Image (cartoon, rainbow, N blue to C red; front, side, top):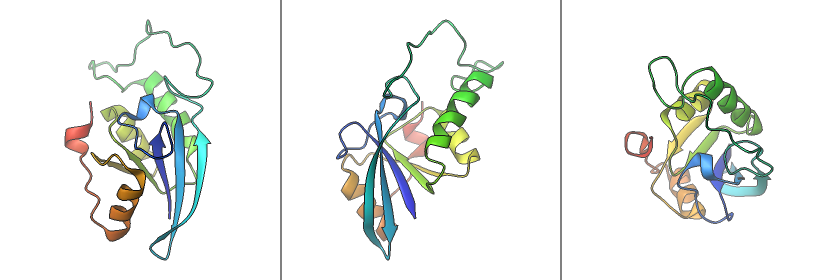
Length: 138
């Protein structure tokens, strides 16, 4: 299984997906961490090489829900393509639109209050990493 964890320092889980700079990709085999890779995020507000972000366009759908709508869906699809080889995404939190887009792209998404990546991966391997979706989406 391949797990993408959003991070800014390769040790702690970024508390908001959109403000992370990297993915730490962890491959799990035989209930152990097998390999790791740091991958720069190419999309999002604070990603490596991010374009200046113009906030005059809409991030909302026709019902006014932030993180939904055509522009947001396109942006989230680009983010999902960056980790298309992964099975799971772990973050501290993210918007509901991003969460739904990643789920629609086939990723299992876990939002956690754990800060340390190794601790979260150990809990994931044990089957006890809780998804705090309700508390950790905005």
